Amino acid sequence: MRALLDTCVIIDAMQNREPFCKDAQELFLAAANNLFVGCITAKASTDIYYLMHRHTHSDKASREVLNKLFSLFEVADTAGIDCRRAIPSPVSDFEDAVMIETAARTEVDCIVTRNEQDFVKSTVPVLSPKDFLSKLMTE
Image (cartoon, rainbow, N blue to C red; front, side):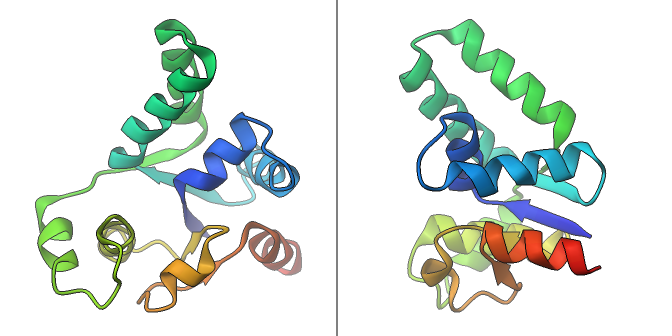
């Protein structure tokens, strides 16, 4: 199974954000144990760097975080066509629409986010971290 992880899930794990970090960190462990193939978008990597840099105040530490993430997760390129297809999308948040289009084009099985309400109109199945972990354990 291939899953595209939303930025919030990555940051929840990396910054120990309560009450979300436990499930997010379990996703990291499941990926490390090859229970699924995790992906982040190339566009998300810049957001993750920015948010980690605000947290660590260190360019070196933030780049090390990205290096570790890139060894654990695949990076799905966000293409121009994803941006173009997101414009007429019924998803009101453009950034989410671009993520959905990237997920669809790269044929992941689902998007994992704790903001499921933002992805109600997604053409790709959307699961919370907890629901995704439950699904992994039943397969």
